[in-house]
Length: 201
Image (cartoon, rainbow, N blue to C red; front, side):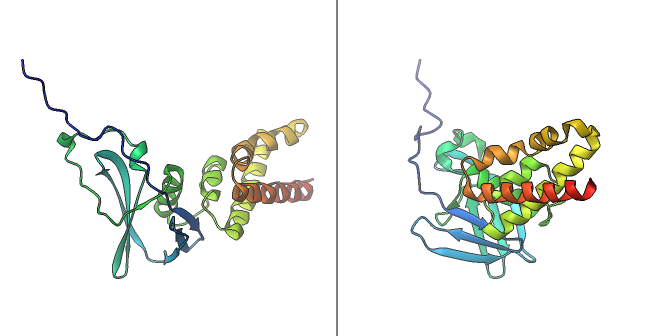
């Protein structure tokens, strides 16, 4: 019996350098691996999200449709599952920007929400703070602090207020262990929540 030919040739693509993102409410800065920065305005930006293939791996593909250009951001191909030829996914071009999966998800979520902080959980705010500028991270932290206080008040147990507040901010605290930017957000969240609790008291 003849052996079937493999559906793919490259089992493990080489790890390619990542770019990093820095988000403000209406602007995005993309830092290339060579240290160059590119600033994009997000006001009126259209975007689309799709599954795609890069180096015969599944990736998530975010296309930013800006005046006169389209910016392509993908998740790392070396972290994606193998995409057999039968999948017939669109291939990405050569000029794509590769960013970490968590950064890609945070940006896609921000765009999908039309740039709003309302309606987010503390976990989602912590993920957003990972790609925020220092000033925007503080704004995110203040929002998280207010959200934590509101959740604590709903629990309606004055004896557990400090513990409940700490529990509400736990996603932010965990992310702050590895991200200075989230650490700034955590400080802002604790400061905001303390001020609100004093006013309530």
